[in-house]
Image 1 (cartoon, protein in one colour):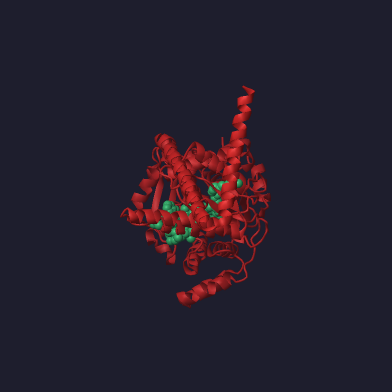
Image 2 (cartoon, rainbow, N blue to C red; image 1 turned 90 degrees about the vertical axis):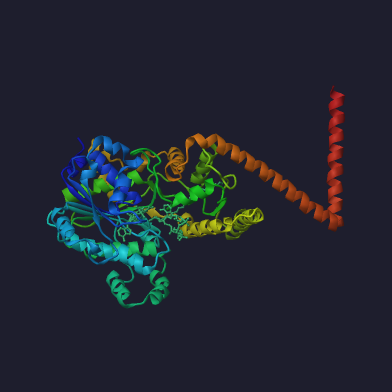
Length: 515
Ligand SMILES: CCCCCCCCCCCCCCCCCCCCCCCCCC(=O)SCCNC(=O)CCNC(=O)[C@H](O)C(C)(C)COP(=O)(O)OP(=O)(O)OC[C@H]1O[C@@H](n2cnc3c(N)ncnc32)[C@H](O)[C@@H]1OP(=O)(O)O
Ligand SMILES: NC(=O)C1=CN([C@@H]2O[C@H](COP(=O)(O)OP(=O)(O)OC[C@H]3O[C@@H](n4cnc5c(N)ncnc54)[C@H](OP(=O)(O)O)[C@@H]3O)[C@@H](O)[C@H]2O)C=CC1
């Protein structure tokens, strides 16, 4: 019997960010392994015209939850959605709901955050710092609380090269920033933001670092742990391989490469691609929840959920495997054939952007205009290049994350728990994982039918022929123009033609002699 699964039995668990990528996989695993848990409270806001109930209904009826319904048929009754907006005071939770949360919660998993790299400083601080402080305050009023698990990111200290499982201080106290945001106006905040974030690459990583400091400062006598995942990717094994449902991190770029939009990326091929499957992160979260509540470590422990130091993969290996998978399982209606080049050189990258990205987009838009349609490719291309440039910082560097606490925890688990809550990334086969990942992007994110693969392959063949035709026509036009204008080009041309002719005559003569 799994000790961790048994631990969550009968518990009331509060999850923030349950509608997000990580949150959904966390709920799924909890329901599947501990169907006798009492209730999962989720803090949700209405979104995109959907009420809380509609959002929950949609999640529970998704493919991700198919297995859950078999083991826990009354899952609808065990989930309690509470209206909340984490960017507001007291999260805008009603008095009754707040009372219930305060008196019943046993475990908190705090996943909610804004993960946009370019969010405003005000909004990112509200969500990633102030909301964390507010939740800790709530936690301190929960008599039954056993553990508070805070999800940060391995990149919260990406201004360092070697990162230990400790909380590093930030140059400016979070409290000072929270206070100043109350009276500064938006224009001034945006002006001082670059000075505040110093050597952090974006507001997201900076505010996540501030969030960790808040956890340290406001921990009171709570049992707290921090988990720092690196780049969270599709599921590795559970509930099935390759599940993914948003375009964050590598996902958007994988689609852009598969559709033939993105054909070059400014990346260091040998840099470590520190991906970590979402189910591995979730297994670690549940094991940490159990360990923190049962063993009550004296201080706040930080756990790295990274792959680089235990089972490294680099961007080159990843890129090659992504392309190899697209050969076998292409995406539908590609713009061009998938092909990609990693370059760390600035000049080469600019060259590829002009020749391989912008030029084809402009040509295609001209074609759309000529055929009476609205041009759109340049806009799409700009969007992709903007996203790629935002991610560049992370694909041109490698970091070393120590994993003492994560390895210590692994050794504390029973063999059964090591199996059910496996977070040993050394067992991951990258080639297999990436293939399933790409397949998952096609099936679960783009919702493309596998029956369309032959047609997609045909489409790629047509694109290849168009490509050859276009290149030949371009070569002939350029050459014709050169010949018309330059004596030198004419001489070279006649030299090549007469050389080919002589070679062919010689070849024909020698083959006739042999006969
Ligand atoms: C030699 C051979 C070589 C071979 C080579 C072969 C190569 C082959 C190639 C292979 C590729 C493989 C390599 C890959 C490298 C990956 C590197 C990853 C690094 C990741 C580091 C992460 C580290 C930190 C990890 C963390 O700790 S945390 C998580 C990370 N956080 C993020 O990843 C957010 C980033 N993103 C943004 O920050 C914003 O997205 C922003 C970008 C500002 C745009 O922003 P903006 O321009 O405003 O555009 P959006 O509005 O956002 O979106 C625009 C449109 O997409 C839609 N849409 C937005 N969302 C979503 C959503 N959910 N679900 C569905 N749709 C969505 C939205 O509806 C809108 O559609 P529309 O309405 O226009 O039709
Ligand atoms: N994905 C990754 O690569 C990594 C993620 N992380 C961390 O993991 C955690 C989860 O990330 P992930 O699941 O990928 O992110 P998502 O963007 O998928 O999910 C974010 C969650 O936060 C919720 N949220 C955001 N704003 C509010 C608000 N004002 N009120 C209530 N809820 C809100 C979202 O709700 P809604 O659905 O309503 O928008 C959503 O449920 C984050 O803390 C992130 O920093 C760390 C490392 C890497």
